[in-house]
Image 1 (cartoon, rainbow, N blue to C red):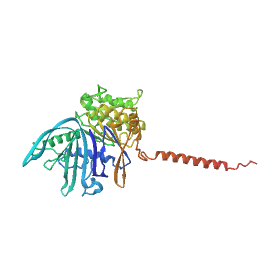
Image 2: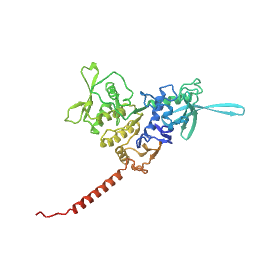
Image 3: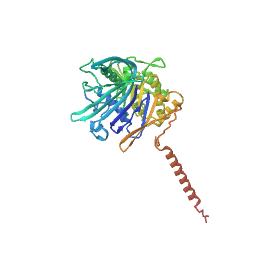
Image 4: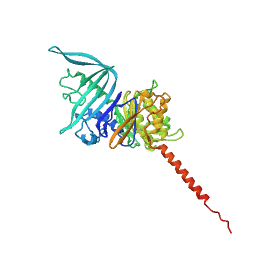
Length: 439
């Protein structure tokens, strides 16, 4: 599980400081406050793995497109150094062999010992030179209980985080850490805030997508894959299908009574349609004929059950097109998959309804306060800052920022004052009218 992130000179962030991450982490804040940028840092590292570049800033087909080093660096100051950091708690601690060099008199001594690694912090600094971005420094700070050991990555490696080396025997610890780095980001999945418009029919090409696509464009492919492969997941210790779990949550959220995948025409044609029944008495219609809210939610719902247990999901604005009641219920979905499927959820949201339900569930002990991390971001004169929201075991936020979700109390007070003034003027007008008797 990712335990923290930190960025320096990244977009609107001069220095984010160490930002705590939990199994369920939510970033709140105003528009352009830097929420998305913090999550983009992880996407930047993930997409870099698949290239030979020091950092792959992205293109129109990548997870995130940051343009160039100059566009990405804070205040476009290309002379500055970009620094990226994350902490990680290893799922299954393992031994790694380290070599400590020293001297005894005039002799050089090298001592190898096994280090039982349970967590580490990765830190890298990149600067710009004429030929492009270059690695200034990179290291892994290894932790085993209270012990800490630093392993540095030098320029003999062809990846920003390590990778293959000419001297594999000497650098075997970094090679092992590089494998762990790649494993971490292979389990990171991202779903953007915009969804592709639903289709009336879908074709099964006998392919297994890794996720539901950046914009939910592969959600039906994923469902068909799980359906045709008879994929099973665990629900409270019992096996069930992803399709059944999606149907159950759609009923729970009062978005649909039933949900099913139906073949169209001959089975050999591999054409399918998604049929939705809004209520027990209503006819089943295709996904293209239902409200946008359901098609907006479906990719996130499928992603939560289609990805392997222990994955990290980055979700931007889940439920943005949903009714406030459903936004509240999303908190229950997120709590369930976080606890039952061991998913780490990193969420950007503007929904006070989601937050209120989360606070309630903490008070009800459905999830512990220390299993969540809430942050509030804001931007002042082009520089982002972040404040960790301190929540007690009863769900109370101790350091509630002013105007967190706008000035609701101010609006209510202003409305009451306007009503009072209006009523006063209308009363004065009525009392000032002189009624004259008719002739």
